[in-house]
Amino acid sequence: MTADKERLEEQIKFIVQADEAKNIFRHTYLADGSRNENDAEHSWHLALMAMLLFEYSNEDINLLRVMKMVVIHDLVEIFAGDTFAYDEKGYSDKEEREKAAADKLFGMLPKDNENEIRKLWEEFDAMESSDSRFASGLDRLQPLLNNYATKGKSWKKDNVKADNVRKRISVLKDIAPELWKYGNEIIEKSVEKGYLKD
Image 1: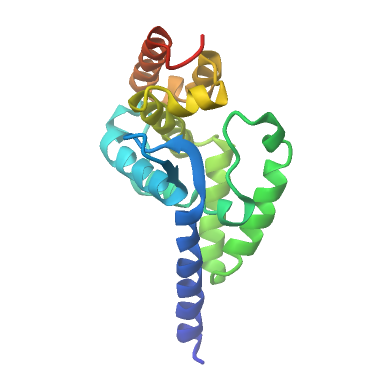
Image 2: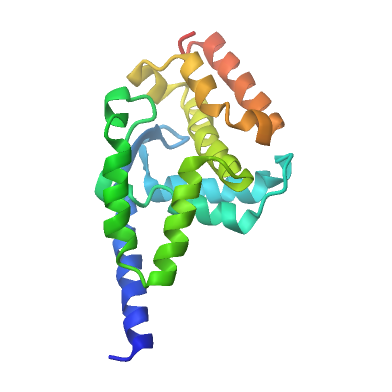
């Protein structure tokens, strides 16, 4: 097998494996409340949000890098499983599980692809760059939007409190103040309507 053919085979193997993201279901429901969303749907939704909302960043961001981050940020859950945002016990070993999953999944790729995706994934989690803070902010805003649309379906099910949601979206405060303000308005409306506990 030629080097080019081997490279292509590795990339295709990874792409087929990534299809498993469609079977990783999250706590958040689809906006119509009919069922839980899966990781692939969540990542697509974030990519759409990035495309439409990047104008609200008050720092220079690289839209392509943000879109790459949101597409790959949850792929490790194929092997590590989804950890619910408000599950303290689940977070106790999340980092360890996800690093092992990243080694296994990203290791399927040719070295240059592996390095690029691994670095983007790590940058997303670190939330230190403008791109990663914006991408992470969208990742936290999207479930809020869906929860509001479903009248707090997963919030009620999991007994989530308003302060927890505010804390989750606080990453938007500096990078995208208008989105942060909008998110807080939705939280207040959700408390008023009984979708979310104060």
